[in-house]
Amino acid sequence: MSVRRDRLDAVVVGGGVVGTTTALALADAGLQVALVEASAPPRWQADRPDLRVYAFAPDNAALLDRLGVWASVAEARAQPYRRMRIWDAAGGGELRFDADAMGRRELGWIVEHGLLADRLTAALAPSGVRTLCPARVESLAQDESGVRLRLEDGRSVEARIAIAADGPDSTMRGLAGFDIERLDYAQRGIVAYVHTERPHQDTAWQRFLPGGPLAFLPCAPGVRDVAAGHASSIVWTVPTSDSERLRALDDGAFDEELTRAFDARLGEVRAISQRVAFPLRRQLVADYVRGRMLVVGDAAHVVHPLAGQGVNLGLRDAAALAGSIRAAREGGADWTSPRRLARWARGRRSDNTIAAHGFDAINRVFSNDRVDATLLRGSLLGVAGRLPPVTRALWRRAAGG
Ligand SMILES: Cc1cc2nc3c(=O)[nH]c(=O)nc-3n(C[C@H](O)[C@H](O)[C@H](O)COP(=O)(O)OP(=O)(O)OC[C@H]3O[C@@H](n4cnc5c(N)ncnc54)[C@H](O)[C@@H]3O)c2cc1C
Image (cartoon, rainbow, N blue to C red; front, side):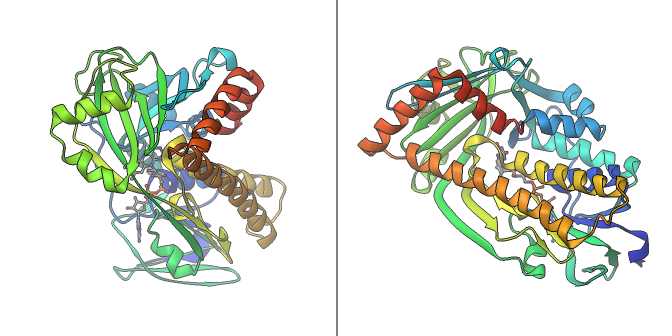
C-alpha cells in the first residue's frame, strides 16, 4: 500500500509530544497530514504516574488549548506552579519569581509526559491526521516537489514536506544527512517522586550544588496517595561518577543524602518511587531544513534540563512552523517555498541555540566549586533577585513571551 504524494501535504516521523503536536498544528493550519510512529504510547493511567514530568510554559499550554487538547490534560492532572525559588549552596542571594508580580495566576504547570502523549495521540484521528503505527522509516528520497519515505514494512508515503520528530537518536536526521554537534556533559539526571515533610506551596524549587542543580517540582494531588501538597518530582543533576553510587544507596541513605542536598528546605524528604538516571548531553543540528526535509524537537536540539525547557523549545518549533504555513496559505503564497522554510529554520535555530548555550553557561558557572565561580554566582543571583525588571525579563524568555 502507498500513501500518494498528491494526497498528502506533510508527513511527520515520530509521535512523541513534539511530533504529535506538530502533526495536529499542521492539520489545524489546513494541511493533509500523516504521522509515522514506531510504537504507540501506553495509555496513561492515573495510578501509575510517569517519572518524566515537564514544567510546561504558558505559550505551549495555549498552543495545546488551540488544538483542543489542554482541557483534558488539565482536568486529568496538571499542577500549576505559582512561584520559583532558585538559590546556591554556597550562599549569596535568592532568585524569586512570583506569579502575582507578573500579573498571572500561575507561572506554568507541571505535567506528566505520559499524560500529554496520551491526550495528544487521542486527538490525532478526530483532527484528520492519518497515523501509521507501528511503522519505521527505512529510506527516503526527495526532489524539488516532494519527499518519498519507504517504511520497513514495504509501505511508502509521499508528501510535499517531511518533518523529522523522531527524538534525540533520530534515524531521519541520519538518512537526510543533517550535520549535528554533540557535547557530553558527563552528568546524569536522577528523576523520582518524593514526599516532603512540609508542603510544596505551589513552588518550583532549584538549589545549585557543585555537582549540578537539584530541582523539586510540585505535583498535583493524586500522585502516589500522598497528602495534597506533599508530593514533588525531583530532577537531581550529578556527575556521572556519582550517579551509580546514589542510585545504589538503600532508601534510608538516599533520603538522608537528598534531604541534605536540598538543605532540608521542605523538611525531611522521602523517595516514593524508583529512581531513574538519564545521561545529559547537548546536541544541536547545524540547520533545520534540507530541501523538503525539516527537523524539530529533540531530533534538532537536546539541551540541559536545568531550566526544564527541552519540550518547550520543541513545541515552539511546531508552533512557529504552523504559524508560517498558515500565514502563507491565508496570503495565497506558496507555503513550501525554500525562502519561507529557511526563514522558519533561521528563527528556530537562533532561539534554540541561544537557549542551549545559555543553559551551558549556567551549568558551567554553577556546577563547580571554584572560588571565582562561587563568588560570581552568589552575586548574580543576589543582583538579579533584587531587580524586578531583570526577573521579569528572565521570566518572559522562559515563558515564550
Ligand atoms: C528521563 C527524562 C527526563 C526528562 N525531563 C525533562 C524535563 O523535566 N523537562 C523538559 O523539558 N524535558 C525533559 N526531558 C527531555 C524531554 O523528554 C524531551 O525534550 C522531549 O521528550 C522531546 O520530545 P520529542 O517528541 O522531540 O522526542 P521523543 O520524546 O524522543 O519522541 C520521539 C518519538 O519518535 C519515535 N521514533 C523514534 N525513532 C523512530 C523511527 N525510526 N520511526 C518512527 N518513529 C520513531 C519514538 O517512538 C518516539 O515516540 C527529559 C528526558 C528524559 C529522557
